[in-house]
Image (cartoon, rainbow, N blue to C red; front, top):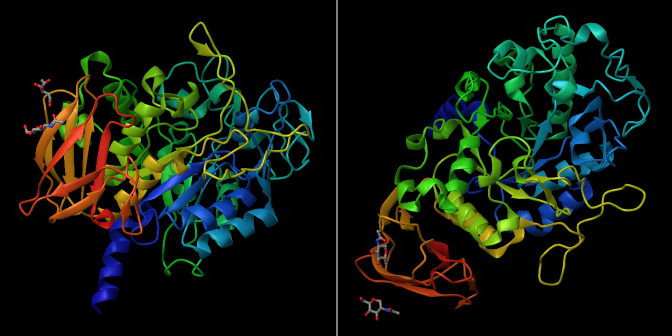
Length: 512
Ligand SMILES: *[C@@H]1O[C@H](CO)[C@@H](O)[C@H](O)[C@H]1NC(C)=O
Ligand SMILES: *[C@@H]1O[C@H](CO)[C@@H](O)[C@H](O)[C@H]1NC(C)=O
């Protein structure tokens, strides 16, 4: 009875808030624009062996093909139908990916674009990834099917039909987001078409959904759709498991729509997290790492058990979406690794690691004019495969931040310290900070312009530990800095301010 009772309680308390990862796998990675075949391989060869819990994939449904500019990444946010058919692969490849990833305990989270269809200026014809006919002007999408009455034109009160004023809640939810044809999610027909799409994915074995543009939908409409969803496939998940839901609500404060309005449906993406962490690590606006002592709700974020967090995402790493210039990305690798390290060590929220492709970033008047670039592609427009170099990094302009030693080892750190309290905080009043996670792990940063030499209480059992940032434990050897923890838990740390990575992380699975 004990186990059943526990499962029941966990089920009731968590439901759509639980990422449904296998035990002791705590983080997910966004493999932005990857092909399904490459993701299946990555689950087997890298993500499962390194303790990743899951993958957020790019939208799998049919989208419009845009030629000016040439196949931008954002064309995938312009649905034409709910056929599983995109640059990432066809339905057979999708099924194969979900099965192979699930079989090694790595789950799939689908980016669900359900607020809208393609842009109003997308024309008419069959220039869609599966060749389905559509007419944007007459709002005709026979492959779903949707027609004019399935869109919100009659409800939108703005002059242009687009969202003009983010302080007008009805406009934000009933008008077109950058001209995208806005679905009437109060209509039963639309709700049931969307739910049928999501249920088909659930049937194939996905573990949950990122709900794109949730801020642009009424929370009750999202709920009505979620209420139609089936439990997860029992081939891989316990009976009665609900899909994990995290809703894209960009709430940096200062707008009337709040993330909290969506808590009843699932988690929300906490955009303040990356915006603030970037500001602190860059030391802008007088911010210091010492101020991170009460990181989390203390910074005005949503409750930890309602948050999905990330340092950067596919939008704000290229200046789209929220966050602005403070957002740290792979382009600022040294600071980025510190930020991701801090995120993965800190207990707040469910964590998502970004994995990007490189593009020819080029600023004119402060704006990246190449922010639209799609994934690395062949001459025929097909997405390039992710090649793996002998040193385990990726080729073909795939950045693969999740394979950077410092980031991958911190994903493992988070798994090792899972459930342990935030403990033994120390700071020097400036940008040298440290904290532990119970008696399982400890991390220390030096983001000041001078070196650090300090003895601290780690909370860890006595022994010699191998730093997982400057290297790692391999068999019984340490390729990195060694940290000696005394019988009383104290250890001395030395971090030069010009070290390649000015932070050290140790945990009980990296004890020599
Ligand atoms: C920060 O740390 C350094 C060295 O650990 C120390 O010299 C300094 O006084 C500390 N405090 C401040 C406010 O910089
Ligand atoms: C670090 O501090 C300790 C104790 O103050 C001192 O003995 C040691 O020499 C210092 N190490 C360095 C490299 O400055």
